[in-house]
Length: 120
Image (tube, rainbow, N blue to C red; front, top):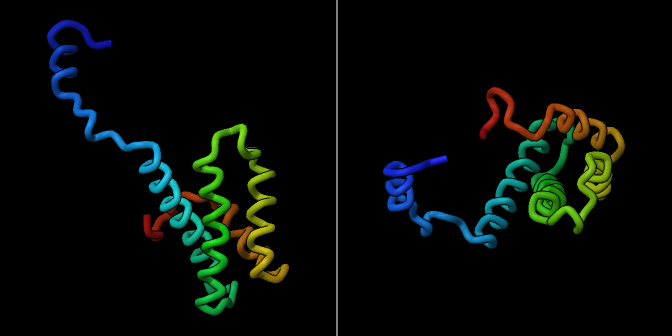
């Protein structure tokens, strides 16, 4: 906790114009959802053997699921890992056969964070 002169200095230096509004945070979350989805699809790479259009559609459908869970309040969606995985599987199943789905799942098992050598 700041007190005295340090507190006064912090108050004077605080700039509320540097904060993001809720809608801005949601847009950043949507962007991050697309980054995560693209990362997983790219990680599975050639094992998916998809045309650029199908790859883009898969990435977008996964991004929608990720975004919903990044943006929604807890009471609006089931945030348990199993529920999210089920939603992602449902979204991916529109684009992938069982073998491709298994490859995407392997990519997801490595987490959503960038691995060494992957774009951040």
